[in-house]
Image 1 (cartoon, rainbow, N blue to C red):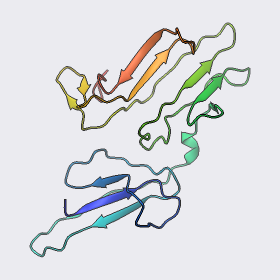
Image 2 (image 1 turned 90 degrees about the vertical axis):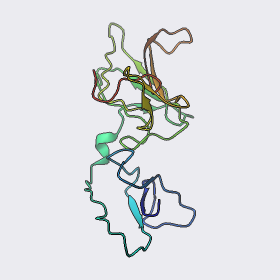
Image 3 (image 1 turned 120 degrees about the vertical axis):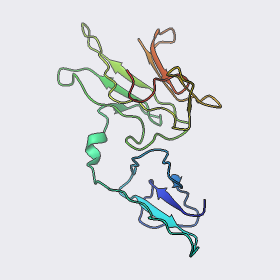
Image 4 (image 1 turned 60 degrees about the horizontal axis):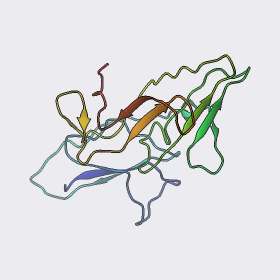
Length: 185
C-alpha cells in the first residue's frame, strides 16, 4: 500500500518518536472498523502519500467528537494486584451500575484476561444486561450458519458463570469462534 493513514490512539503527548507504533494502518477502500477511539486525551493521524503525478484520488473524509471520558467509567472496584479484574458489590446505596472491557470504547488490548465478579446481598439475584458485545475482527469469515469462524480460531471470549467457585456452572459463552453475526438476534 503506497498511500495510507496511520492512527495513534494511545499517545500520552501530541508528538511522535521513531519508536512509536501505530494502533492501526488504514489503506484502500475497506476499513477494519468505522469508529476509532483514543485511550488518552490525544489521538493522532499520520497521512503518507507517494508522489505519482498520473494518479488523482479524492483522499479521505471523517468526523470527530470529543466525548466525556466519564461515560465509559466502570462502577466496579479494581481487584488489588490484577490488571483489569473488578468486583461489584450490592449495598443499600448501590443496586446497579455499568462495566466495560479494558480501554472501551477503544478496542480491548490483545492477550488480556479480566474477571468481573458480581456479589448480591442475601435475598437478591443478579440480572446482567449486555448492551453491546463485539469480539474478534471483521477478518473472521462467516461460514453461512451465523457462526463467525476465524482461521486460526480466535480465543476471544466472554464466559458467564453462576459463581466464582472452581465448580461453577457455565451459564453462557460468547466467542469469535461462534458468535452471532452483527445485527442478528
